[in-house]
Image (cartoon, rainbow over all chains, first blue to last red):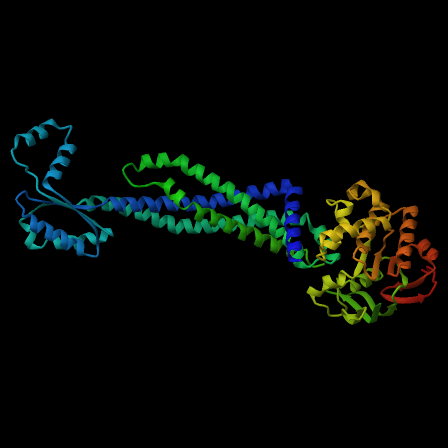
Length: 307
Length: 227
């Protein structure tokens, strides 16, 4: 009996969808538009967050030691820094590596290169590249470096983070605004979308009002009347989610090269992000659209059930 | 058996009176015509029988079942025991003749195999065996009403309610529909016919309940149209 009823609900739902295909098409189109708008807001937010993360990740602090610095003291300092909870990574660069890098950086400047070649010994000392969890952690690291023990071996501190501070402040501001206004915007869009979908589904169900009345008169239970509309709504939701997913991926693939060019040098692989989260995105779209459609149709059917 | 005990129905919010203090009983296997002018309460009586509205006062009993305060979830069970035929046929235009009849069984959860067996039988009774794949718009008004009767009969109800079944038909088709209702009554189904067609009532020579302004003014065996 349950099997027979479920099969009939499926059949009737599909029949409703197919025999009213123009109205179904309009409903699906509106649903796609809605889902796409909401996805767009989420995408902008993801891009902004990822940009900020990658810019933050890029920021580090370098400490250059004099060429005469005792290696054991440097290693001790490295160990001390690595123990700090704020520090995520400390990379040791030996004097040889520093020289290679220096040459590489100045390969277009023959005067500097000649001067370096003219020296018998490596004039550069070792260096430590330090990365912290948060930008606000750098002052704590500087306190350590300011320890008098290290003063005679430290030649220079490149406070890269200070140069980046203003960029990061601006980006943080943008992401905060996106988080604030985006949320409001998304909520407004969602409300408009739900109203649009509700209206479309209501028009669709309005065309079935007579049929619903007849079903009730020949003894159909409310559940029997509702089931095909729920099935029909799920069909709308699945089709719209699939098409919307296709649109998002096309969009992401189209804008990714521009974004990557714009943020050249930063780790911002938006395509990878979407590929990795494919299932989550699809599931969210399906669940969101099913909830919107099924709720709308249940509310819309309710008024015609009173026969 | 249908039993009305002191039934009054007042429609809110304008306090329009549907029926007032109605008492009558229809026995199993009877053929009863309910006659009266438009707006006198005939449709209210039908609506009370199928629990589309509840009485303001009094009791409505169908079989042994007091449906006066029937719950919403029990309404479908009641309706599956009563066949209904309407003036405007109320067929689903997007479904074929066969599907329209089968529909009444599907809503009861009947097995598909049984539906395949029962629908052709009942279509044969109403004389539509050759038209099962047509859509309602492709057949005549008289034939559409036959489909509606087939749908009302297919789950073998004990009671058949016909609300102005001939209202939209010419006299020849109307006569054929009435003969079909008589035949159904001979098989043992209780038939309640609501009409204001004088010729039909006088032709039938069965029990006639006459209603005027919500009150029964006459209830006669072998009665005539007196309004």
